[in-house]
Length: 106
Image 1 (tube, rainbow, N blue to C red):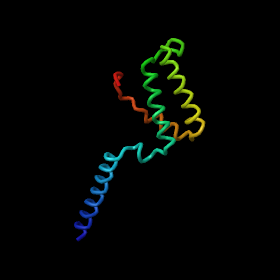
Image 2: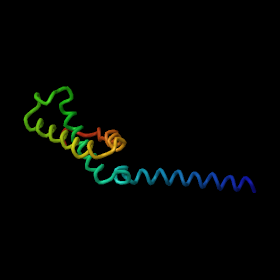
Image 3: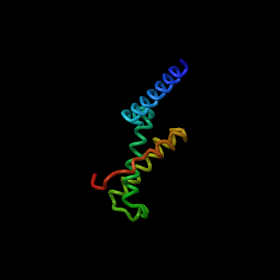
Image 4: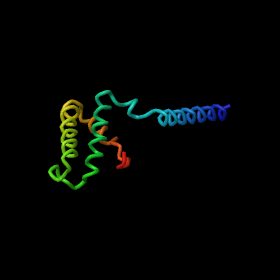
């Protein structure tokens, strides 16, 4: 009798863990965990990272005019709409979730 109860407990825990893993894989982290402001800031951070990745060792004066303006705009937007509004924990969460896998042709 005790072995049957133990087996049922093991099966229940296994099903719960498997269900949790499946739900996490089917649901985007950004959709569940980020507020609308955080989602907007995540997009700003992703775009800013792409721009910085194109010119990793350059200062703004060395960039093409349009890229320099875009980068400065994104940096300004990041500071005004994200850093000055969101708590530090949210900022770090966004920075840690920046999409680093992208093609330069996009």
